[in-house]
Every structure is written in C-alpha cells, then in structure tokens.
Amino acid sequence: MSGLFDLTGRVALVTGSSRGIGNALARGLADAGATVVLNGLHPERLKAAEAAMAADYPTGRISSVAFDVTKDTEAAAGVAWIEENVGPLHILVNNAGIQHRVPMLDLDVADWERVIATDLTSAFLVGREAARHMIPRGQGKIINICSVQTDLARPTIAPYVAAKGGLRNLTRAMTAEWAASGLQINGIAPGYIHTEMTQNLVDDPDFNSWILGRTPANRWGTVQDLAGPAVWLASAGSDFVNGQTIFIDGGMTVVV
Ligand code: NDP
Image 1 (spheres, rainbow, N blue to C red):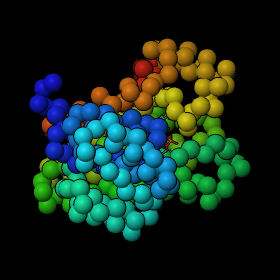
Image 2 (image 1 turned 30 degrees about the vertical axis):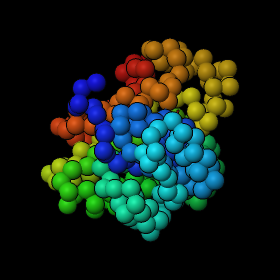
Image 3 (image 1 turned 30 degrees about the horizontal axis):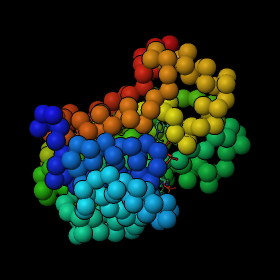
C-alpha cells in the first residue's frame, strides 16, 4: 500500500465504537496501522468490544475510554486521558449517534434535545477538545459521521435530519476556523447501512424493497464499505481535502 494511506504511529479516537459503524471504522483505521481508542457510553459493552478487537491486533494498539459525548467535562477528561496514556491524538472520528422515530407533532422537546445533543452538539464538544490539542501541533484529522439525512429529509425523524444537516455545516465551520492550523475536517455521509440501528428497517419488507429500488447499487451498504473512505480522510492522502462531506450511499443522493 502507498505510504500516503499508512496510519502507523497515529492515535485515533472513534466515538461510539463499541458496536456498529464506529466499531467497523475503528477496525479500518487499525488495519491501516493506527493505534485506536474505542469509546462508548456503557463501560461493560465497551470493555467487551476492546477485548474482542485487541485479540486481532498487536499488543498496545487498542484501548478504550468510556465517556458521554454529550457532556463537555467528560469529553475533556476523555481526550486528556488519551493524550496522557496513549499518545498525541491525531485522528478523531465523531461517530456516536442515536435515532428517535416519532412524527413531529407528537415529538417531546426532551427527545428533540437528546438527539440534537448526541448527533450534533457532541461533535462540537469532542471536536473542540481534540482541536485544542491538535492546533498547537499543527496537524490533525477530524471526520464527522453524517448521513444521507444531511441532505434529504424523511417523515418521523426531524431531530435526526436537523442534527445531520447541521453536522455538515459544523464541518465547514470547523474548517473555517481550524484549517489554517493544519487540521483537515471532513464528513462521511453513509447511505442506508445494515447495523443494529437499522435492523428493524431491513426486516420491514416494504421499506427494504423501497431501499433497494431507491439505491442505484441495489443493495444496503455494509459497515466495511465505509472503512476505505475513513482511512483516506484520516491519512496524508487527503491533506488538501477540507470541509467536504463525502456521500457513501450507493448513489442514492444523485438520483430521483
Ligand atoms: P449503533 O446504534 O449501532 O451504535 C451507536 C454507538 O454510539 C454505540 O457505540 C453507543 O455506545 C454510542 N453512543 C450513543 N450515545 C452515546 C453517548 N452519549 N456517548 C458515547 N457514546 C454513545 O449506531 P450505528 O453504528 O448505526 O451509527 C453510528 C453513526 O453512523 C451514527 O452517527 C449514525 O447516525 C450514523 N449513520 C448510521 C447509518 C446506518 O444505516 N446505520 C446511516 C448513516 C449514518 P453504547 O454501546 O455504550 O450504547
């Protein structure tokens, strides 16, 4: 592999990586050589994910730190722990996210705020903390995990649509303020990916056939489909890519 995409010696934090897309992204970065720190909310699930992953990589390459990405003090303590115990943080993937499906007329404010906090504010909190360490070193990569709902709405998921659309513009705002300090901040917008979060949609025959018809590639995405773009955006191969959101959706957002 070209050295352009080699992540050996780079420390990467992937939020929400105890399972699902985050875990696959963590494995993709580790396969490219990175030292990876996993994160999640539930310590036991996170420890189990760390043990499973550590068995597949050389000793010392995989660790974990549990913290709530919606809490600024926890985000600061988590990033400080990494800097002290693992090494200088070079790559941050803001992946932690939740979904909540309710028609807007029935949506509680508390649920709106919970989704916005987890899917949007968290990227500001963890991103700001990472940038505070990266900027003095003059380098760093931040990858914000967006969605096709960054661009397209659907009924019943208003806070998710608002958060993911906001995340693309937060990616641009981070670029406006931090790119001159040597950071690259970009977004990855996955299409419909088969994970625990979408299992109920895969199991719904009507929704499943709608997805297949709506996706030029005629399939659901897999978590592995996202690893290559993440490695690229985490590597020197993307050093002049700034503020972009890359859609990895089998072509869904380019057709009507
Ligand atoms: P999962 O539900 O499978 O996993 C969510 C992860 O986020 C878990 O590790 C969970 O930790 C963690 N998490 C949730 N809340 C917090 C929090 N407050 N603090 C720290 N960690 C938290 O999600 P997916 O893998 O499906 O989705 C991951 C990302 O990808 C999300 O941002 C989602 O919006 C996005 N996405 C998903 C798509 C899909 O088709 N699945 C499509 C497009 C985008 P714990 O295990 O401790 O609960």
